[in-house]
Image 1 (cartoon, rainbow, N blue to C red):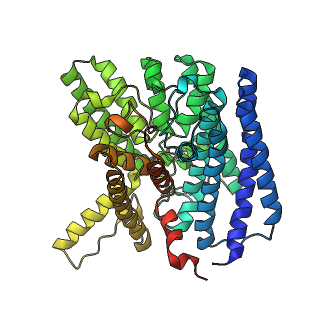
Image 2: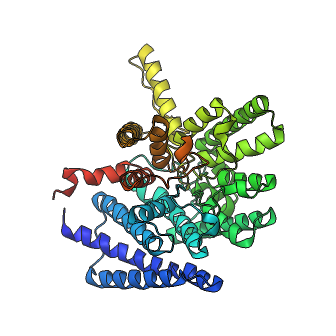
Image 3: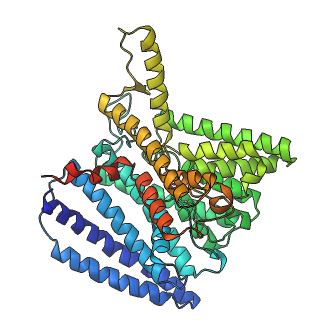
Length: 484
């Protein structure tokens, strides 16, 4: 590979570093306001990050890069690696006494909007640290949507949003320029965050908790300011508020933008929206009925907790209101299956995503029909669109690769001494960017603090690979990628 491509990628990453160094001043000022000495940590981290980024920016200046698929793969990996390292720096230096593996895990969990944590004692943690976790989670959500809408579709690794920016009935585009679309996207993203914060404040949270949880909710990241997550507040209206915003942010942002900015109802016809809402409703209603019949809980309470927790799992937010493992084996199995599924393409949610299940179902259906009529041609469709062979290949490759990574990761965790449930659930929850796993260690009532450094590095890699659609990371590990 040409060294100039790496130079260009590092140059762009240094710009990200400059922005993040400025963002560190927000938790620094917050700690200073509350009289916590960690303001010095964030100020020092901002100074170091700014100096290194500025130096790198000056040293790698060159003309605009010739954008190619190879450069796209390289840039995505360099940017997210830089984001993870810079995000870990103040956590590593903070008064929480995290080692580097723990700080990196926490940072990767934030920027990939996974929500898994190694921090115990969030209720007494420095306010700057809590704000930094939520802030980089929120910024990670922005980056995820940008990747899903603009970069990943170009790389053709099966991670595209199928929604077209043209009307299905006319040739009129809703946004004539990319800058207009970008402005609309940030307006909607910030607007939803503000509405979510207001909703949380009105239903039981103080302003600090509301702002932190709103940023984490809109990014479907699941970071809380309390060890007990939403169970700390004990508010049913708060659960329904969170359920609404987690579900909303699991939908494709391109569709939300067109719907809000242009009022186009046809934008909501994307098949993955119906499929996602359908399996969320089926999971939540089934679990609520089971919880009511098995444990005698009042149905409206069971329904609120069920919708909240399954919306949290399927949106890959990772909050919890109760330890749903205590509801019974049916709910545990349902939660495990839901961990694989995820939200919609073009959203901040992770997982396999609804549109891939639609394509897989149509591929199976087409294959079965072809067994009966071998000479017939049955195109595989997504909505009104026929899929080309490259798109279908990328989606099937994603499925197979995810399963293989899950198996290999689970075997590695088992070899390191963990039981079956912890091994398989820890790997899939990180690969799907969900947050909590199952079992006593990494389940909804636990966290990842007891895991040692090798496991944390492994799971950090899984989170990053899951967030970047797996193939985007794997491709740079192949020898052919680095050849001229």
